Length: 229
Ligand SMILES: CCCC(=O)SCCNC(=O)CCNC(=O)[C@H](O)C(C)(C)COP(=O)(O)OP(=O)(O)OC[C@H]1O[C@@H](n2cnc3c(N)ncnc32)[C@H](O)[C@@H]1OP(=O)(O)O
Image 1: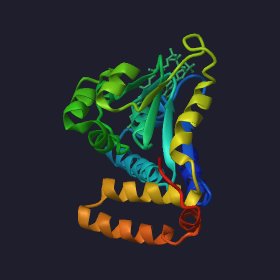
Image 2: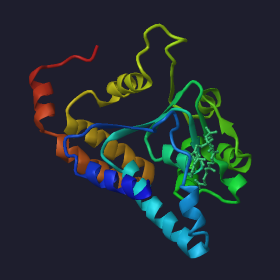
Image 3: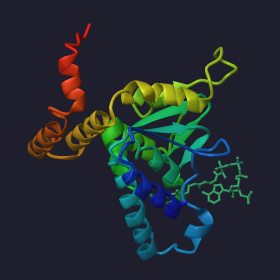
């Protein structure tokens, strides 16, 4: 799974026309973390750090894609699976889903970068509670602390809501409507603001601004004298 994920991220890095990404699991589970059979064979600190480096690299590249990304959490996101949700810009949770950083129960802490990202998403107080208590985050708690950005409903509870994936596509559609260069620029500006010190982020913003200023979408908008009512 780890190698497959890295390969998909490499492919996405070459997707020049892309705007959005939805990451979802299979068989009603988002992801139950690292393969326990595989990790038993590498349960020494050196190999653990190699895995950590590999996954941190992959998930950092995933988060830095110039795409607006959503983790669609159905079923459970456990351990490394919970960390994986934090490598997307947004998280949508199905009504019976759970995100749980079970690392403490495994005698571990996050190692795929999910600890650092979690602090930035929910703040250090909430991150300490989620990791220290290995708390089960359901959609209600997820929305309350800002780990979840929305909830996708089940067919029984709402009339014709569409599948979870269709709901996620509709939700994401609001944020990726428009030309790819502009949406990609939006992501780059937010990413630099999120990751860089202010002076560097401002420089990056200027560079990104230069890529869209006078570009096709900008010139078309100027020509159409659009009003933002
Ligand atoms: C830095 C990374 C840290 C980590 O990720 S540590 C790993 C954290 N994850 C876990 O501990 C997951 C442990 N598994 C579970 O809690 C349960 O299997 C789980 C996911 C809730 C599903 O429960 P159930 O619906 O009852 O199904 P089940 O237990 O019979 O599982 C179905 C088959 O899937 C297997 N499975 C689930 N999670 C796995 C994993 N992470 N690695 C390897 N195998 C895993 C499970 O062993 C079972 O296999 P089998 O059918 O018995 O051959």
